[in-house]
Image (cartoon, rainbow, N blue to C red; front, side):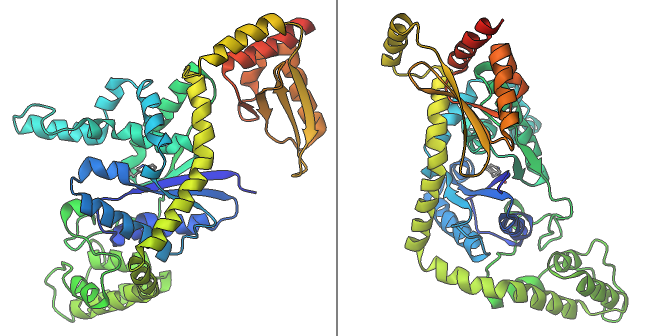
Length: 431
Ligand code: TRP
């Protein structure tokens, strides 16, 4: 059974490199194959606009990152694989969250603070060159995560603060409007080291020291030959510690292969030869995927189709959930107001009702409906009818107060007010 919802996105601002592969693509593809995991993976193209002002580059990067995920084995039938900008509910949720987020909280976001500090150090206005998009980055990211009620978000360490902010926004919203959002957690892969780049610093677009994941074989070889090493001659023992070459090898090789290279370092392998070993090992893992990647890149229409299918799956969740959120905050059709007034007068005697039932999954459920048969509250599945009945009985006895006792077993399908009112009907009669 799928019990764990995992979600992550990659910003479509450049060409995927080895660091993206080891840090994000490879672990997410592996996780997506676990039977208990329900995965949501997406191309964060709205986020790309914050950093990239070149439309052709955003489009190209979107193609490349989508093709990368697919070439690395992501199965779009098994996961929900989509493009952020295909889900208009995400910017809508961004606004709802914006309205429960303290401006001071965003002032403290690392990326924004770094820009301000840089400006201040350079004697500029603190906000010089800072767009409101950069400032709002954490809210858009929270909307990505909360829209699908993700439990876990695999990210790099630099993103932990963003996940914490998403939790805070979820709590504030829940506090104001009822339990709608799951509080997400960052999932940090401790054993995945940050990959060094050509110059030994962290491999990153911003340092211009990356090795493109799907560089053609010859180019890959040339880049690897250009990795910085120290000046030790062939025959001299070499340090594995602090060797970018060694760390890169380690990220791809088995423990035995890594031990063998460490041995070769100790016995004075020439740098040129060590680079050749790294190149062959990398290419062995990458070459089969590169073939698929090259085919996919030649076929953008196919990828477009895959992404549209993913968007459809994602919106099957996002559209009804957004409707519920709109209702919760008071973005409601006015005729419903006329309706409730009428019903409260004319159907005063008709009562809300509980119904208990069993589903095809073998579990026991109950739901609460208002006098008109509108669904107000829905339970998750209980393994025994007794558990379902006991929970229902507590709701009847304690009314709205009992709601908080079962946060993960109950799903509000209408606004809190309406549910509370219906429950009071029972508790007042009982006490
Ligand atoms: N900010 C992330 C990064 O740069 C990308 C991203 C956008 C993301 N939305 C997300 C990651 C939601 C996880 C969940 O790496």
